[in-house]
Image (tube, rainbow, N blue to C red; front, top):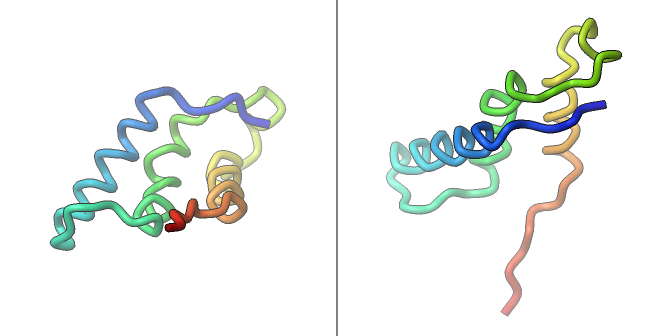
Length: 77
């Protein structure tokens, strides 16, 4: 379906989430920050296979599906 996003996409997501955390008065990024900004940072950078080029919102749907299915890592003591 999709080949992936460029490394710039990862950097954009990192910068967006860090800026948002700072605006919120935090010195750390939460998983919810990443979930919230994944689509705006990555959807337009996603490299789609040709069969998806004409499908409206294909990139947004792919990012949304990933965000909703990938579990948040948990640190256990």
